[in-house]
Length: 231
Image (cartoon, rainbow, N blue to C red):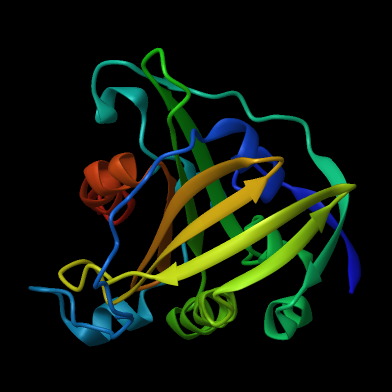
């Protein structure tokens, strides 16, 4: 399958260029994408909350001051279009190019930001989406299930072959209403890059944090707290 896609900062090509190679000990991790109720929040209110506009979501994104010393926000790069072919993962190929490359999801309301850390090339990126709880849940679940359902596959982005490996990780049950997490390894031209991606749905807001595993773990809680703040 060959499709035309808009590659974003979280897409395969950009991830290979922007996120440094790193190693993470994930031995013994087992899949965990079960839902859990948000502590202290009435379930009915969370499920029926009205979606936020894109402009409102922008105000809920992390800022460098939220992250601490050494973080700079990256300017968004001009959209690039690459032909993408998925080989060895029919379920992911069926979903199309945005899913295959980790590109921006097709929910109507969205906002995103990416940050570099210190003098290294480490990055962490945040995406916020808003829609009905059912639509958010169905959309992100289908993509995570497809990506983690194929432990190894290949993506051809433009003329670049990229070997992919995916692994489900335990999701942080204490956060939000539903959670998903995975570790992606991109390998090309003898170079490997590891990216952690964790998604949290809280009512009508979906948060996705991606990047260096250590940075994702460090900032996930504060990203969710700001994403779901009522003021």
